[in-house]
Amino acid sequence: MLIRTTATRRGRTERRRLRARTTSYDRNDDETPRTTFDSALLAVARKAAEMIKPDMTIAISTGSIASKLLDVLVEDKGTKTTQYRGCKYVPSSLLAAKELALRGLSPLVDVDDLQAIDIVFIQPSETAVYYNEITETKNIVAVLDRQQTPIQPSIIQTKKVLRKSLKTIVLTEHFRNFIGGSVPVELGIENWQEIAEELDDCFLGDAEVWRRGNSGQEQSHPMGGANPYISPDGLSTIVDLKFEDALKGGRYSKGFVLAGEDCSPFQIQAEIESCGGEDVLAHGLFLTADCALSPWGDLGLDVLVLQKGDDLPFQ
Image (cartoon, rainbow, N blue to C red; front, side, top):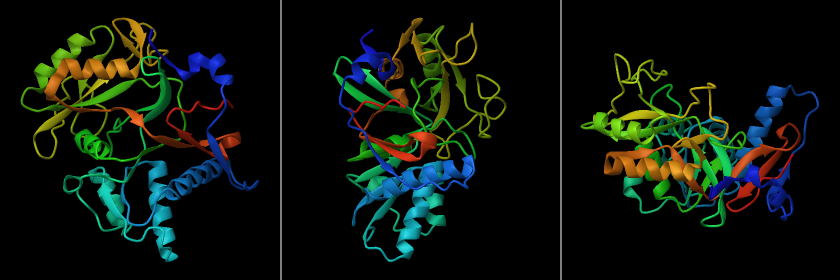
């Protein structure tokens, strides 16, 4: 197989010089594990905030670390710091827009009115590092927009923001050896069923295609149940490609399978886009992040800053 994860290259990785950098912060011995982890997430958020400069255009998604990043920005603005002077904020989703408005972070700018976004902070559902032997690079890869509550996401909006990003920072609570499970795909509403059937044929035996329900809860029917999801503008719906091992149950041991063989997210992305063509409006695989920030070390008490091309350090 041409593409392998960093986990399968342990021997070669351990011989290479570690370039990932960590920033320590003080630990309070009286803290509970939950409080300690919350402090670790806050430390990641503060490291992210250090990357913001005056007059930048910024997009921030939703999620545990992203929420703390917004709190840090509000707290620092209260100290009259000049670090965020002139910054503009781009909502990456409807929920992100509400979070920004709730905290009084402004001005808000529509992504369609911009040619570029200086920096995007995105918190995926899953994150891993994969080695691509074709390009001979290590990529920070992720699954986005898997969550369905409190409302369904707009994968189209997320990808539109990412396409205009000059630098994309992934915020993640932890790294997996392999990403996998379900991958959301947004389809045009007019012929969604035809495209869903094409996807089903492409991944026959490897994944099932289920349409999301409108409630935001996990659907109980491949067609989306009694009230299937339709986007607010009426132009799209979302299906999930569920990569689950029918024999053993749960996730495949190495994340994804194609034609019965273990494969990489790069191969899954290519298959989704070739099967659905232009009728696949967006999908949840994101394979080109510039940097990732995550809790690391003993009890997550350090901040890992992992650049594209870096190896994950071993704990």
